[in-house]
Image 1 (cartoon, helix red, strand yellow):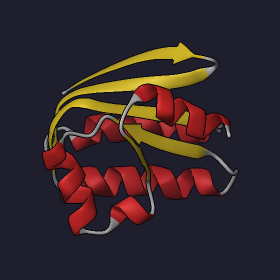
Image 2 (cartoon, one colour):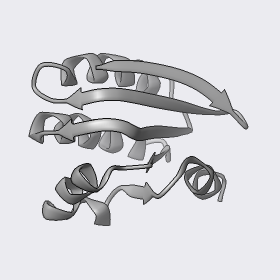
Image 3 (cartoon, rainbow, N blue to C red):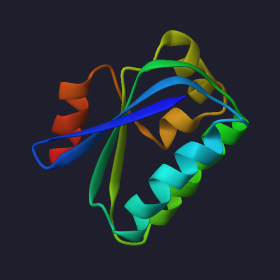
Length: 112
């Protein structure tokens, strides 16, 4: 898994490439931990190149989501592939996470 970060309109956009699984989720957790510690107000995770996510990956995202709730932080996910989106829907996490079809709509939601 690779993690690339850029900023657009003062919002960090994190592109993740590859699988988010038991082997790689600690790397994602280590990347997200400073974001919650620094109270990053808004964060966009671009899932366009995520091919697979398992329960450990979901747990990592839930952990970050819960951490930012304390200071009113926002998290949006964009460009989920049908396979990955299906995982979120099976466990009903689409009701908790802000899922968007593309980066522009996710940015708009974060700015709202």
